[in-house]
Image 1 (cartoon, rainbow, N blue to C red):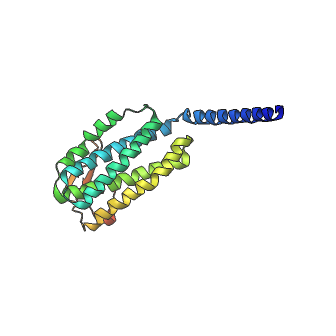
Image 2: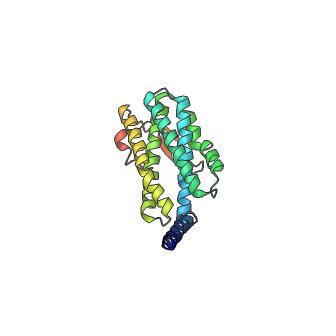
Image 3: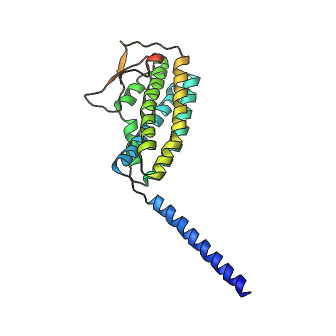
Length: 213
């Protein structure tokens, strides 16, 4: 009987030691700090989510194109989920409300508000494509260069969904057979300043990748 009790005591002690070690490791991971570049990425990714969601919600109000509506719903669903994960990582260090307000009140949204019909649909899809190329590159850089384990894992897991959104946006743009009309331009930039870039309202699918943003 004493031998059994001793064995149980040893096994119980080992179990407690293992559990303590696991919890300690988990706490260490939770408390792992972001460096400057990682925190900047969090802010950029959350800002991008806010911008994509704002544009997609506007598309649901303005577009009658089934493909554009489907794309907008996809963007909203994907980006809301993505933003919640980012918020969990940031733990309150980034003001999401301010980012959402900025996304609603900028020159790009004002310009989109002024468009209707095909002009809106083409520009919306084209902007999604441009934005996704840029943010996917940022996510991929994090998967390579980040030292924060949870952030690195998050970025790695998020890339396929973002690439899927990009594929759908490209398909929507190409299937419309839309052509570019360089003389019809509107300021479509995330920043309302004197350096606002001009982006064609009409897009040519094959020129998207090489367009001089």
